[in-house]
Image 1: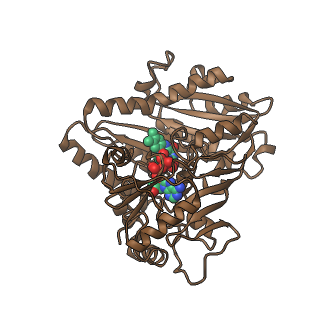
Image 2 (image 1 turned 90 degrees about the horizontal axis):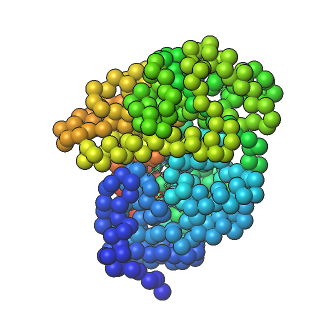
Image 3 (image 1 turned 120 degrees about the vertical axis):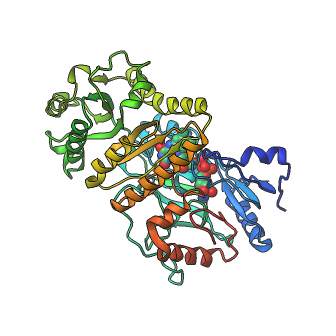
Length: 463
Ligand SMILES: Cc1cc2nc3c(=O)[nH]c(=O)nc-3n(C[C@H](O)[C@H](O)[C@H](O)COP(=O)(O)OP(=O)(O)OC[C@H]3O[C@@H](n4cnc5c(N)ncnc54)[C@H](O)[C@@H]3O)c2cc1C
């Protein structure tokens, strides 16, 4: 017997996500295992009730926001069964802390890791600063338990083929970090990763963990010009991409390279007294090491690229690293304060481009004619440009700029979403990026699995 909570005073707490869009729903269900999820799924199919999966609602794209029907919350599925086996509703940060206490690491590190769930991180192929070294969530998932739209429960791995009678999805994804659209693959696991709650509900996952690095060193480095900074980024990336980098003492080998521009610098000034007057931008970097981090090597290459080496901040121990994280966190936190003061939503990009498009798009970002702050994962050519409108008119202008930049990212061979996904608010951009033929192949697959279009209606594309 399915128990549906229809109390709108409770449901109202589940209707929005971090995109600030709000929907409506007739019922809320909080199953505690796959069998209950399956029962709900079958009931929804039988009665053609739209069902939206909601986890922690940190999505910035409206994915968990329902427009009618029922909501299925994963919040009660939160058992950490072992170091490698967790329920879909477990908070990622909670899981990582359990591992950390045992000297282990599950590398994917979305900034929202202390709020978001493991199941959603898989469903959205989430990533973070460490993705530069370790990749997004996808390579760290070995198997998942999924409830399909017909209610079937299946445990799948990369050995599980996609059934031969399912329509196939053919397209060539850009060769950049991307979280936009179904993965073209012949195994069922990779299809389930990044499907954003449209093809199945992930109730449990088996994950790969590794030994935590012995030590991690943090650096903040300032540069006099964007060109100098990008020259250094190119050297650091080249080193990090060498196949034998661990054995090559002259290769710089950062695990994260994060950029901030001169507008972002204003936000960290309160926490860092020593920002040099000639600095126009900077990098946060992390280096994993055992014993000697080989800093001379770093300083030499930084000096070659005109970095302001006398003002480098080095964080060697836990306490110093915490301070460095606080400096880094001051940027998104400062952006949020400006958004609140302006009384208008920010318009933030999530595009990435191939290496040869980086300079082009960075110049375009820095020359937008309205208040903005640029920071993010430059190691993956993935920056967040935050446009900060202060009136309705500026908001419309910001949306125009955003769309132009999205088209530029696509024309450079990049993606309209590197990590936040498409959800319900970026469907147009996905269509711009992939075209009707590919979107129609997604539709055919969706229709085969979910003929009544019950699960995750309106996510990625419309019916
Ligand atoms: C401050 C902030 C920082 C962020 N930083 C990052 C970042 O660095 N990197 C990054 O990748 N993202 C980031 N995000 C976006 C967001 O946190 C991720 O997309 C995250 O994976 C969403 O997790 P959630 O538990 O909140 O899921 P929700 O927002 O509740 O749902 C997200 C989507 O996944 C689907 N879904 C949820 N659970 C399941 C499940 N078990 N099975 C199938 N489908 C499911 C939902 O239907 C929805 O479409 C950030 C968001 C915020 C607000």
